[in-house]
Amino acid sequence: MPRACRKPETVQAIFDTHLSLQHKRRALARPVDGADFLMQRLAEDLSDRLATVERRFADAAALFCVTPHARDAVNASGKAGAIARIEADPAFLQGSDGKLTAPETLPLPPESLDLAVSLLSLHEVNDVPGMLVQIRRALRPDGLFLGAMAGGGTLGELRESLLAAESEIYGGASPRVFPFADVRDVGALLQRAGFALPVADVETITVRYPDMFALMRDLRAMGSTSTLVSRSRRPATRTLFLRAAEIYAERFSDPDGKIRATFSIVWMSGWAPAPTQQKPLKPGSAKISLAEALRGG
Image (cartoon, rainbow, N blue to C red; front, side, top):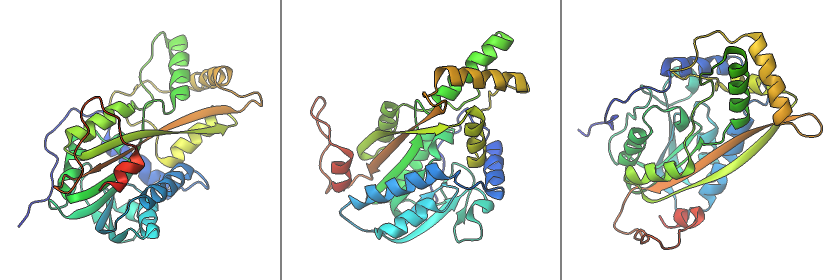
């Protein structure tokens, strides 16, 4: 009997997985109208990107997406015969069918999927290379992985404002915002994981808020507040947040007084190797676009 794909090795934790699940359970239990705007936007983008793929997939899975948006987008695209949800907590399935598994572990036999999708989860994975290897092993030859994660530059304004306020008040600062991977790093990780025709690109989404506290309320409603293992254990005081909000408004506001928040979304695609695929380009030659890579499977 084929064994499920397992995480290949243990790595030093960057994120507190238990706390991350707790934040997301709380967000789902206390939904805020409109706070899922980013997931909705990415689900629409997923549909658009799947529309460029000139084939249909028999078996698909949405991996650790927390909400049904990705599954629904794949269903609506008509590109998959069947799609399953895989989640790390029963609360995320909200009574719908799906598979439960430990975080960062795919409970799938090798070569059991034709399409795997992931939205807004990989940036909170401790072992991204290991996760990508598991996804590639779970794909049948010429199977497609298509995902989106928060990348470098995401919430840069919030990061800068909090660091500046904490340094000013306490004489030093500790991380309060996730570290995000650069698009070049993501492309290299896809290649390292053994994907053929790996492509990564960036979509920048700018959202405006009345003030920093409105942004933080949305992040909390998304279940996206800090889960860093190395996060500061010093209680965040009202004084700190008020000063950070002032700095944010001073540095990152528009003429009407509203502040800007940047979400840099890294889209990635890769195919499980198959003899029928076109060969990789030679070093130094022109790179193919994401649309061309998706059509090339």
